[in-house]
Length: 324
Image (cartoon, rainbow, N blue to C red; front, side, top):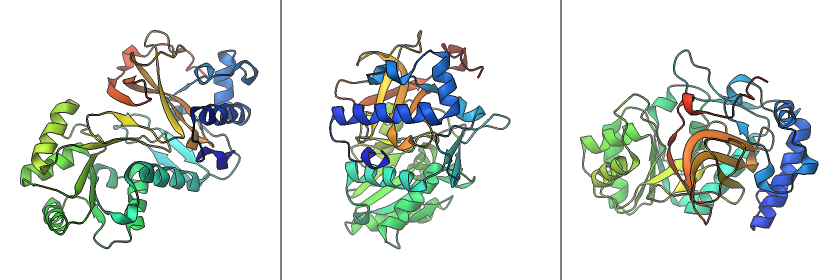
């Protein structure tokens, strides 16, 4: 079954593999099985994606979400604030993660070896267990280019390298957290022609929160580019969505986003309505592929999606099942 995940080509393929993964996780994931049992949902009753139960993402903070008896090879953790519980994603097959992010990037952007990758992820580099740092570190190695690398707080050196690479026509990816990218543009103005700027979100108290349009306009003006790319990922997922501008994200063929009714967490909405973001990530084969996140968003008819905000804790309904 794992071999089929990255061979999906049609919506019918996706549904067939997703239903098989649901049966596998119902059988092998104790927490997810208990959750399904509470909802009186059994695989024999499920024939569409919309009928599959989506596990509230908060369970990754309190339970060990595993569908495998294999040894845990990596544990990815979220960046929680002091005193808060952090999410833990236990990964038994790190090759599934590698294959997912490598093929996902190639699906949207082509061969990594064509790029120099510059990473500006200071708040992630300061802690262990970041799935984002793991992915970007591998990106840097895959470029096989000595110019690629991480930058912690040495923004001046990064600015010089960005300019030099762009001037010689080198295809470059600058991936970073929002506040750090803004720091770069405040130190120097650019007019980049061969560089792709990708933000991964993340102000987290380092700066005033900005709406996406405002943030992207500041970054576009500062770097001299006509669009800002974005990455949509999280500790609990082994796949990423990407936006090549305007905050509209696409998913690779083995990932799909749906929205749930904000008043009734078990009801999946039609495209075009704002609701809670539910993610199907088939690369999560050994944990849980069906996750109800705390993001609010909208899915468009062709399967693209946008993130509008987050649920306030007081707004989360339908989670009285959290007493497992």
